[in-house]
Image (cartoon, rainbow, N blue to C red; front, side, top):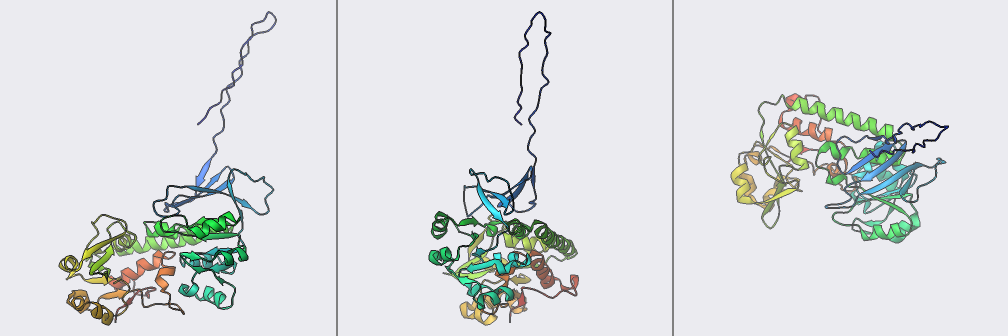
Length: 377
């Protein structure tokens, strides 16, 4: 804390006595954060001034972006030294299917005016808006159509990038359109990803609503986690499959997916491995360790046992294959083929966790019907 001391010299004059001014301390601004789990962003209230801070815009990003949030009706002078976002946002472009459910939960889907490669959108509400022409196609994820974006003139573009600033988004920014990177996919915990609904809450000036929605999801998740502790058997679990060149990709022990399996009180066979992404292993090493695994959850993009066998006949030798204990989220799709899990699961980790509990010990959730996963046929 910076302390300012105002010191007045004392003048010893014949007719005046020495008088010392009391020390005055500068008041430290009070900063309050509402973020509990997410590491990639923060929302700070600093003496009534709200800031949205993006800490992880993309992978290995060293930049931190701060945006001062101002209400459109505010008479407060804008600080030209800061990036300013006026809320509520009325016309928005989002660029990932994971953004769609969060916007919908806030009842703001009609504010979406553009989306790239909308074929992947599964939500019925947003799908209807696309089919009606209310949401324009703006290119593909890695190649946005800047001409269409400039013509749409959105209040804000919520973008994402894997490893560096997106060139098309940089062009949009230079043209005077606000762009904010959303790094929800970089979060390492299920609740951390879900908390990004607060990111959209502040943009639509619906912070209380976003907080309430997240609080319900958080409570449901933690309740399900406690229920999972009753599963004393802790069945063994295998995940992933061979995706290319005989390399088996599966979640590393510190990954987002491994956290789900841990919270479901399961014995994931690679839970002690290092890494927050995926492991690339040989078929032989996976077979040696997981041949007798009780369950096989999320076998890559495969949606049937026939597909697995067409890819590699050796899959049939796994105990989980023989006992019909393979479960996949890839069979539940939207109208145009988008996998519902990839769109909705980041927002609803509580339902993913319940699915895993239902798969491995259905008696713990007798009345619950799985949302994302199905037994592979």
